Image 1 (cartoon, rainbow over the protein chains, first blue to last red):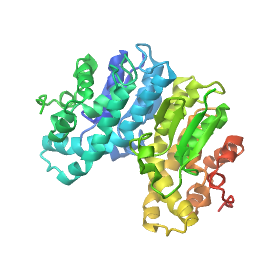
Image 2 (spheres, each protein chain N blue to C red):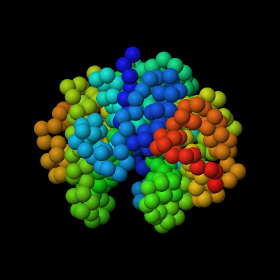
Image 3 (tube, rainbow over the protein chains, first blue to last red):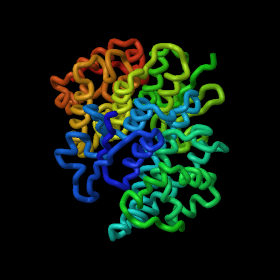
Image 4 (cartoon, chains in turn orange, blue):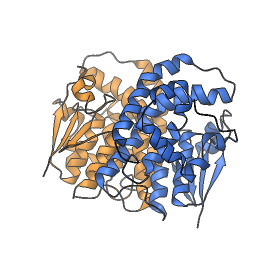
Amino acid sequence: MTEIIIHGIPGSPYVRTPLLVCEEKGVSYTLAAMAFGTGAHKAPEHLARHPFGRIPAMEHGDFRLYETQAIARYIDRAFDGPALTPADPKAAARMDQVLNIVDWYVMPSITSAIGFNRVIKPIFGMPADDDAVAAAIEPARTCVKALEDILGGKAYFAGDRVSLADLSAVSHLDFLATTPEGADMMAGSPLLGWLERMAERPSVAKTTMHRMMNLPEPAAA
Amino acid sequence: MTEIIIHGIPGSPYVRTPLLVCEEKGVSYTLAAMAFGTGAHKAPEHLARHPFGRIPAMEHGDFRLYETQAIARYIDRAFDGPALTPADPKAAARMDQVLNIVDWYVMPSITSAIGFNRVIKPIFGMPADDDAVAAAIEPARTCVKALEDILGGKAYFAGDRVSLADLSAVSHLDFLATTPEGADMMAGSPLLGWLERMAERPSVAKTTMHRMMNLPEPAAA
């Protein structure tokens, strides 16, 4: 079987999502690692794979694809293994909704502001932008509340089985409770139980940011 | 059959996409119109439908949903009528890719910068931000090139039949050639033929921005 190749920076949440999809489906893949902070994503070699210079980009034989959601859905559709998209339209709609909440609202607040300043920058000895973190608190709280409302009493966002929604959201949320601001906004949240369920999955344990970056796992805040 | 209700501002490209999906599927719907520039999208009544205060939001009986992609996919999955998602995984991947190119790259450059300043603001007598337009030219050109590459020699982005990709992209691109900057970057583009094919569809003719806003149609630049 032709192997999936994912080009991207190890530790990136957007790169992690397709790796999680491969792990959950039992699909063989290679992560073609690009270095952080070297401008590799703007090099001509990568722009040929992704004209907007983002990560990840996928190759499957001669089929090339960029955009994380498209890659995740492709791997789910094209391979055997457990379906990661619910058959019921309403359940699938909740999955789609979470995928887009992650892109539109979680990414700028939780990922780019809180995560980047509180988790990534310290690893590289870069100073945190506390103003950016402060400005992200309210939008991040809105994300947490919106995701709690969608999760409701279910085990996973789209029902009683894991879907692409969980694999996307966990890539962006699993470090949040390790930051002071995230620990505060997630105190008592049902998302903590969901995060525990997700952390028990071999796919999630194998692809943590710290493991992908060959760093020791942090303790919870 | 329970009718679809779409809450949103008439003329908004993101509101147009689910209307196009309803039209193509033959699904009965009501557009619950919100006024432009009145802050209606941040009012408690709307925040109860969409906690992030964006548009559109959908109701289908007691099922409430926000996020345009999720609404479009839901209407496609939940109703009879022509399938707007290809069965082939590679074709579906091209559809998904275009949906996300629109969200990530077309929206900030073509829609929010060029379209808002060259099309929307003049309607309301607001001064254009020429710096914002100038800054959007190169990203917009990258969008046009990326979409041309995906379209290739096909009639539509995902193959020989219209898909959600076309209905999303046409909502954001159909005014572009009416702006001086857009006319320049689209000169000779195969996207012009695609736009002509799309304009011939009754769904597209019925939902133009100008028609939704009860304004006369503009002439091409």
